[in-house]
Amino acid sequence: MTFDGNETGPTEIYLPTAGFPNGGRASEGEATWDAARRVLTVRTKASGRITLTVTPE
Image (cartoon, rainbow, N blue to C red; front, top):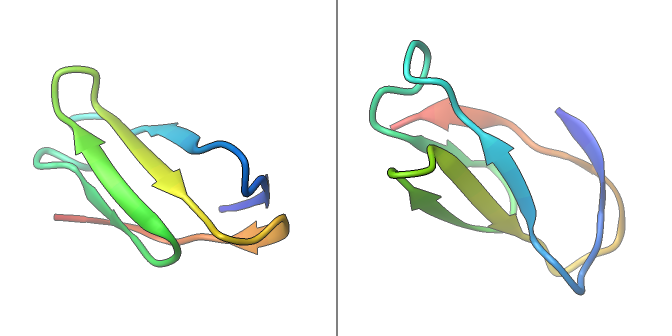
């Protein structure tokens, strides 16, 4: 996925159970997984256009 990163706040990505039963891993930034909400929160240190790949854990 490609999105506009913001160094002042995280990006939250919902990961469905079907493709990501145990959460996911982000190719860029620092990611944390919230299993209860099924949300991967990604923090990047850069602003602007970012291409991110999320792979299943």
